[in-house]
Length: 82
Image (spheres, rainbow, N blue to C red):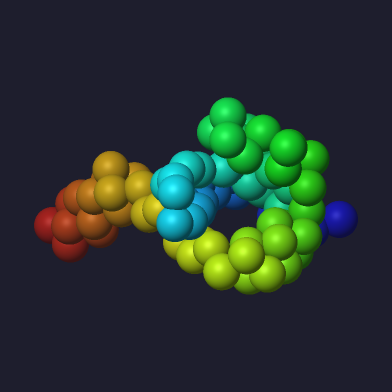
């Protein structure tokens, strides 16, 4: 068994933009949390969400966690001084 396969999948925040709303879902391959307007997507696989959004002309964009990125950069900078 690979050590990485024992880790839980990364939870991602995805912003969905339509003509009449902007809302988010959290997914790790399956939608785990969703804004109220998208609650019907709970339990959907990512591929289904993508097909559904594409068919309606909605845009999807992963929201990058700025704090996590900053932490990564700070740790990299700290390692330079050792």
